[in-house]
Every structure is written in structure tokens, then in C-alpha cells.
Amino acid sequence: MNINSIFFYVGGILILALFFIKKERKKTYGRVFGAAIFFIIGYLWIFPFLPREIFGEWNSIKKLKNKQIVQIILQPSLPGWKVNLTDTIINIYDKGRIEAISNLLGKSQIYFTNRYSEVWETTIILVSNSNDSLSLKIEKTTNETEINNEFRNDSLGKYLEKITGFLSPSIGGSRIKN
Image (cartoon, rainbow, N blue to C red; front, side, top):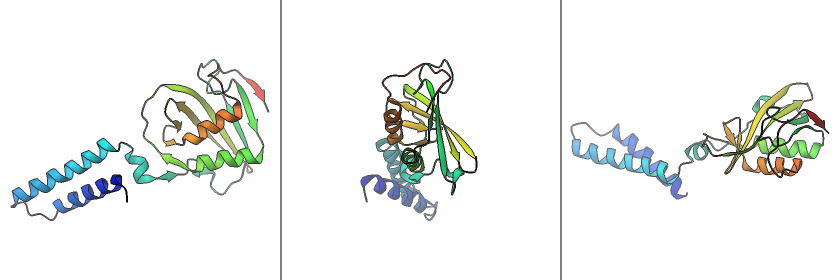
């Protein structure tokens, strides 16, 4: 158990203890309340990544559960947009790459956005063998890779940069590349 967990659990136990202390014992109640606030604020101040610590890994593509993904399409977010990962539409059929991207998306962490300056963004479309599809907006900022502003997986951003040969953000167009 790390210090992060200790702060969280002690603060939680102290808050629960408040329900069992009689209101007539104002001195005890005040001390426990103060300690609980100290541990909760300490936890939030020292460890600002509360959502990931509590909720852990989530599957950002759970809507395609039990379906085989046969194609992934990477496309510019908007034509003419200046911070695209790629300036062309890229179709990915390679099973190894599809599996790698799917695994990274499946091991995302729940996330509440911290606004950093954006490096690039792209729209990724996952197509299943039953022609169901799921569109996700991927944004790479200076510190993290966000998926639909809900999830985070920094490894995904690095992998997409490797696939596309990313050097710098580009202005999105409409050319198609396989």
C-alpha cells in the first residue's frame, strides 16, 4: 500500500467516523472532522490524479465489446485544421496494428481533463466485422494523450505517431492513403 492509498483510506475512515460520534462531544467531533479534512485535502493536493487512482483502467471502446475490429481509419479532425496528426486519411488493415491500437484503447484510464497546449489531434474510426463503427477523438497535448476528453493512454499517442511518421502537426486535407 502506497502513501496515496493511505491518505485516501484514512480520510475516508475519518469521514465515516463522523457519523458515529455524538454531536454532544463537540471537541472530539471537531478534531475528527479537522483530521478528515486534512487527509482528504492532503490527498487531493499531493496526488491530483484522483480519478485514475480510484477508477483504474477502463475500456474506452466498450461499445464494440465482443466484436472483431477489421479496419481502423485515421483521419484529420477537420480539413484545414492546423494541428492534425496526419493530413491524409489512413486506412489500417494490418491485424497486428489493429490489435495493438485496440489493446491500447482497451487499457485506457478514466480521466478528467487538464488543459495543456495541444500538439495534435485526429479522429479514429474503428470498424467491426459486422460493420458497426465507433468514432473517437484523440488529442495529444504536451503532457498526455486524451481519448474523447474522458480517457487517457499516453502510449496510444506515441504509437499513432510511430504509425503516421509524425514530425510536426499538419493541415488536414482529404487525400486517402492506405
